[in-house]
Length: 247
Image (cartoon, rainbow, N blue to C red; front, side, top):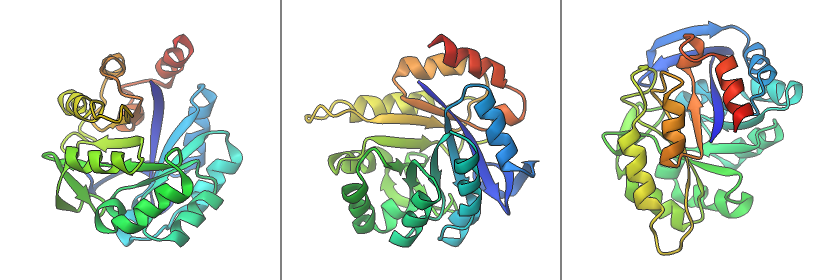
């Protein structure tokens, strides 16, 4: 299972929210590049970079930070937040993103998101399927849609999507443990389709202790995104380094 630390950006700073609420913002570092380099120094290869300003304004905002981290580290970055147009996508990839994550766009403008999958390929486009009571949430989690989570995932699976990041919003930033039952349900439903093409599910939200990581791996998660547990010292970078080495 891949270990993918998260850096969330507001006004150029590394922050974390709780349950997606911008009013709960905590600034952990003024320099996202410094944080990214500390991840890289501990053998971490991947980074989940979220433009929270972009998510709120529906356009890419913090692409200069993406560019700086991409050019000054060797981290493979998946980038999300506010990607709504072909121009946004072009900026993200030209700024150094290895993959992009589309969440709201996949709900609100299926035509363009399906076009991205067809143009860039399923190895470059991640479906951000964030959930609140198993309903897909959009617009930086500021609103719920009427989309049921699992049918939504399965529909995009039929369009070629492989990588899916699923955050249970109720868990995000709460350090109360991830949604094991939800992930098991997704994997059971979406890996049993007749095509035989399984999904690569990336767990996100609620990770609070190192012991949860092997459990997620055992469930069949392809990766896990870890945010606040690192910043609050619940999981050390040394523990993650040892986990990566031991695989």
